[in-house]
Image (cartoon, rainbow, N blue to C red; front, side, top):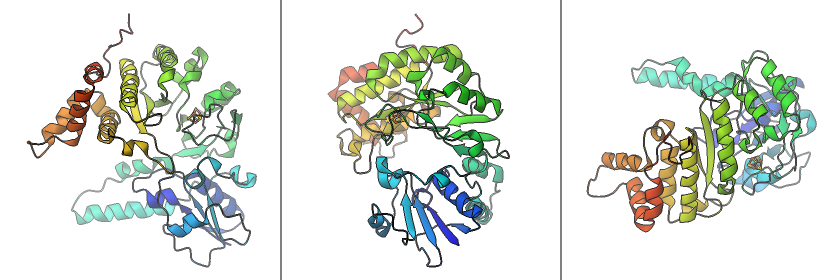
Length: 397
Ligand code: SF4
C-alpha cells in the first residue's frame, strides 16, 4: 500500500510551523499496517497512491479548486482522496475513525521535509557567504521535534458563537497520556479545547505533572474557571512558555478582573498572555473601545494582550470596517510583546510616523489613530496613552 498525506496548511501558509496531528495519526496508523507513507508537498496526486489524505486546520488556507469541489461528497470506499479537518468543514468536521483517532501519532512524518528545509537554508546561507546557524534555524521546528502532542480532553460547554467547538456540551476525557506520549520527547503539548472545564482536571493535571516534563496547552486555558487550587497547581508546575488565556467578551470584565487578581497572587514570574477577540460583535467604535478597555485591564496586571481579529470561513468583518487600518494598527501594537511593553498606542503610531518616508503625509498607523481621535476624542484620551504595568485603574488600592 502507498499512502500520500497532504498537510494543506503546510503547503498553503508560508510561515506555518505546527504539525497536523490528524496527518501524524493517519501516518502512524498506516505505517503500522506496513504501508509506505509519503508527506506530499503538492497536489499532483499520482495514480500509484492507494489513498491520499488531505487535512487542514485553517479555513483561509488556499487549496486547488478541484479539492474544494470534493468537499461534502459522501465518503465513497473507492474514492482515493479523503478530505478532513476544521479548515474544510468548520464546526461540521467529521470525526476520524476511532482506530486512527486513538493511534499513536507518527512524529517522524515531517522528518524529510525538515531535512530539506535545513539543507535549502544552509545552501542559501552559503551562497550569500553567511554562517548557517543550524540550532537557531531548528527552533522553528521545535513542535515537530520536541513535543508529544494530543488531546487529554475534548469538548467544551460554552458554545461561543465564534468558535468551531460546537459539537459537545461538556468536556470529557479523550486520550490517556500513554496514547500519544513518546518517551524520547522531552515536552508535552495539549490541544484541548477547555481542559479546566473537565470534571477530572485535577487527576489529569497530577498525571501530567508526574511525568516531570514541561507542558503547555496550545489553545490556551479558560481563566473564568480558575480557582485557588487550580492556580496553585498550574503556576507551580513546569509550564512551558507563557500561560495563555482568552478575554473575548467585554461582559466578562468583572469576572476576568477577579481572576487576574488570583493569577497575580500565585504567579509573579511567568509571562501571561490573553487573546483579545475583536471584530466579532461589531466593527464600530464600540468594538474599538471594548478592545482598548480589555487591553487596559490586562496591561494593569502586566499581562500581554494578543489581538485576534475575527474571521470565519466566509467573512472577515474587520476588513470591511471603516476602522480597518485601526484594527491592523492595534494588532501590530499589541501582538509584539517587545513593543507593547515599552510603548503606549500613541507612542507606537508616532514611532511609525517617524519612520515614514514621505514626511508630508501620515503613515497608515498614524492616520488611523488621528482619524479616530478626531471622531472620538474621549475614547482616545482614555486609552491612547495607557502603558504596560501602569496602574491606571488603581488596582493596588
Ligand atoms: S470557551 Fe473556548 S473552546 Fe469553548 S466554545 Fe468558547 S472559544 Fe471555544
